[in-house]
Amino acid sequence: MREAPQRIGRLALVGLGLIGSSIARAARQYGLAETIVAIDRDPAVLERVRALGLADHATDDPAEGAAGADLVILCVPVGAVGPVAAALAGALRPGAILSDVGSVKGAVVAAVTPHLPEGVAFVPAHPVAGTEQSGPDAGFATLFQGRWCILTPPEGTDPAAVARVRAFWEGMGSVVETMSAAHHDLVLAITSHVPHLIAYNIVGTAADLETVTQSEVIKFSAGGFRDFTRIAASDPTMWRDVFLTNKEAVLEMLGRFNEDLAALARAIRWDDGDALHALFTRTRAIRRGIVAMGQETAEPDFGRRKG
Ligand code: NAP
Image 1 (cartoon, rainbow, N blue to C red):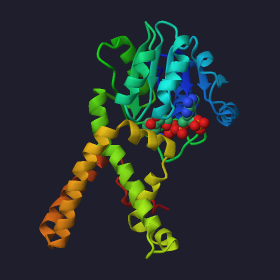
Image 2 (image 1 turned 90 degrees about the horizontal axis):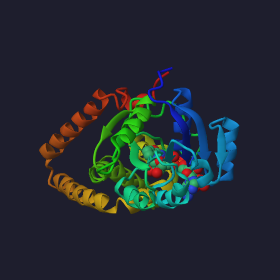
Image 3 (image 1 turned 135 degrees about the vertical axis):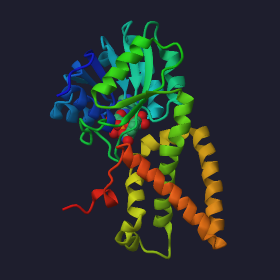
Image 4 (image 1 turned 180 degrees about the vertical axis):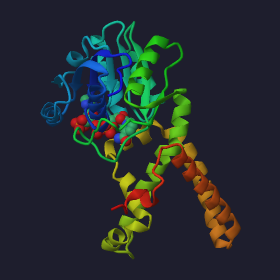
């Protein structure tokens, strides 16, 4: 077990899905919090939280759960962050820190800031880690190990609060980086949001094809399509909210993407093998860079053929 950096007294997590339950598990496993409070609106989720022993206390009342907490982390879909912040803000004690894990940061800052009581710091965070699964059973303590966590504290945020949130994520094994919310949203639009949109689109197109049967799509999926289906199986509510709240950056990146796709189509039409080869050589280097940074396995086909 790694040494607890700056133990949190009372940690309250709102939304015990994949991310919230992973934080609960990691906080417990690495000794990062004395008491863990779970807040979720779904009685079935609260029942699983109790059965799995993920928290010391579980409630459906955001204000009751947040009262007396030192750190409250909102782990709900981005569209729910504002209403949840409004419901619990009045219960936060001065000196408490409010944070979140939303995949979009500008919209979260705009939704939370009006509800922030005097003396409470807001330190937005985004762990760049996850899977296509949802719910409290999908979480695991090592989800954040070796993964980036991006903090986007608004200007003027108490540096001590930022340092505590940083230490908390480092305690869970994350590598922490700080940037502005606007820059985060632009970067993540191209590295995460547009790729998800492409996956949703290609799987949708394949499902709608009339000349290729559904069973053929499934049968021959190993030819690349299967990797898109994993991404396209991601949580519908979470991703609906991501696209609606990071609209501008996604549309900007999508514009670039469409131009580049048109150039590729032109290269194919005019037998421009050199252009295709040059691009595919550059993209292969990107993949190698990701592997070299320890963010992906070097094994062929993601190591699926092992054993
Ligand atoms: P999830 O597994 O679907 O869990 C979300 C939980 O929040 C569910 O238990 C949900 O309950 C609850 N919830 C929704 N609205 C609520 C509300 N108004 N009040 C209280 N609880 C509410 O989702 P997740 O994957 O953990 O994602 C949570 C957040 O993490 C999102 O903001 C997402 O952008 C971010 N994130 C996700 C990933 C990823 O890969 N999944 C990675 C990084 C960051 P119901 O079932 O009743 O709706």
